[in-house]
Image (tube, rainbow, N blue to C red):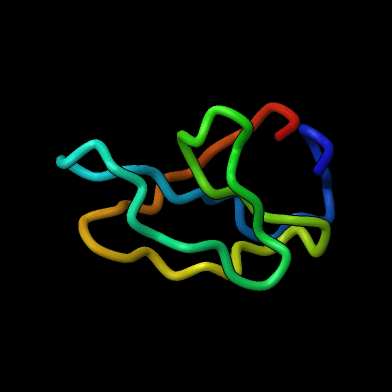
Length: 65
């Protein structure tokens, strides 16, 4: 995914919660960042993944993953 897309309708990503572990599993075309710190929208520019465990959804502007 490019680091900026005007087509993206939700600038959200999933991040670890208080336990520091990313519990969610990517859905659709979503991707895990190269450092494993978040799940970001894939090529469809929409976050398809639902957070699991204590993971949280935050607004992001992400670098290429």
